[in-house]
Amino acid sequence: MALCGLLLLPLVISGCLDKKRLAESDLPPVVTASPLDEARQAYSGGNYARAETVALRLSSDKSLTREQSVEANRILAAAALRNKHPSVALTALDQWNTLAPGTDNTREWQDAWARAMRVLSSHDARTRANAVYQDASRSAQVRSMAGVVLAVRQWRDGDLGQSMVALENIYVSAAGSQDKATLERRLALELSFAPAATSALAASAITESNRGTFPYSVILIDNLRRESNSPQTREAAQAALQQLSGQISLADPSLLQGPPSESDIVIQGGAAAPAPTGPVPGQPVVLALPLSGQHASVAGKIVAGARVACDELSASGNQVSLLVIDTNQPDWVAQVDALPKNAAVVGGPLRRDDYAQAKSRGLTSRRALFAFLPALEAGDEGRTAWRFFSGAQDQIDTLLAFTSSLGIKGYAVFYPEENFGRRMATLFDERARASGAGNVVLQSYQPGDQNNWMRSASDLLGQNKSGRAFQAIFLPDSWKNMDQIVPNFFYYNETRQVLLGTSLWEQGLSGNSFVSMQYYNLAVFPGSWNAAQPSPAGQRLQSGLAGAGAGTADYWAGIGYDFARLSAGLGVRDGWTPDSVNAALQAVNMSWSIAPIRWNTGVATQQMYLFRPKANGFAPLNEAEFRAAFAEAWR
Image 1: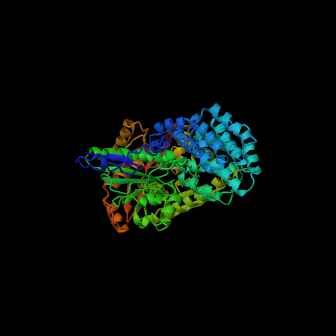
Image 2: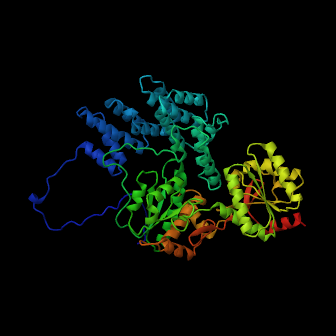
Image 3: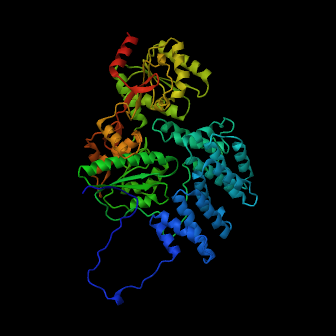
């Protein structure tokens, strides 16, 4: 019978009972579990409803010792949070703190309290948070924590109010760098669980003068990290995050590497079980992803896509098991190491710092990691790990392959004078020259200075007239700046250039905003997911997600779907070597839902799809129409 399971817990192996009759004296004495043990066992076994019921009864039992009452309220708070009963959880937390004064100063208690606040109705959450924030009898640490939670809850309601000033004052009043670091981590954590609109509203208060100070610095990091979740803005956002290190002041610089993870109330025997270490049914398909915080939605899409693939494989008679490791857990590398030996291939990680951790701990020598990253560290690809994601070079090579087919020999690069722009300009120059494209003209402009953009555009076009001819301009900048940049070319009567964008354009055009098409008749950009014209594999993915009630297919779901099918059929087992993995990849011949990836000596290339702007968004490129428009412009 086919099986596709999502395994997050160890397998339970039941033994066989001896059928012979036992004498009563042979039986072990009957031990009756106490109600407190019953609550612990129910929680440990995942029966949170039963755990809450038993612990709720115990929480008012006057016959319990103080230590037993503390434990009962710990279990009650933890189970109520699991059951989405915030009021019950908050009452239990208060009782716990009353029985053990000072517990509210622990991170365990504060994370539980903040989690309950996220589930409460807006009015109740703001009322409760404000009451703690104003309570002079609470410690400064607890009041500050409540102030941060209150502020973020206000932003969720679309209300900035005086929250920024309040947060500034809380930070200034913090006793020292450790308390300031705690505040930064709390704000980063609360933002990581907030909707995108919350982060966007908070970001509207950022200015050039305040972006380097609390709370604006933490909000800025959160916005950039959200942008790094999108394939279209990922590289630019990661480059901006790297650049921030010398521009902002943080008591906890580690926030630039990623938001803190949230702690749980620790119940003896109730902690999350480790990944399976014994045999698992069928061929393991392994994903190592962050299952909480800002990246949880992306990870969820990857897992959903992988589950569709596993269901398909199971339906065709191939037994597979889907195992997911949470890279937000401090022991995630050890969990991967503990997997069965036949789980040789791992999809992920998704974040650069997780990849660096895996490499530093030697995991890359024990498992074949296929990272969902646009680039690996120099020299790693095909030797230390593999890439399962589109890269900057893929974008550029796809554009050059198309434009060279038009007969274009000369190119210009008009780029912003910042890290991402400079890196993309240099890479385009290198790839264009390596492909024999001929002339490449480089011209930069200052980001944010629109007056400079016109002068720089004039300088660029002047080089065209001086004999360094080009017929296409590469524009490595976000779409939001195009309506201020591109009209400058038309102002100087240059209307024939093919405008080449990056995948950054996709996000800006996804909002169906109005596009001034008179400027973009010859514009084109690359992407890795074709929602308008999905491949047969993409159609199967969409059908599988719809059938499971798991939303709409996109690039992230496609990554999970395609990786699971590749992993299950790759034939990489225990005892693999980089050369054996490379040989297996060289022979891959499968249908793809995303733009197909090919490997040459282990180095990935992706022939991306091409799109062009349209009046209310973007559409797949019609090559025949584009060629006709290009020929007409240059005849």
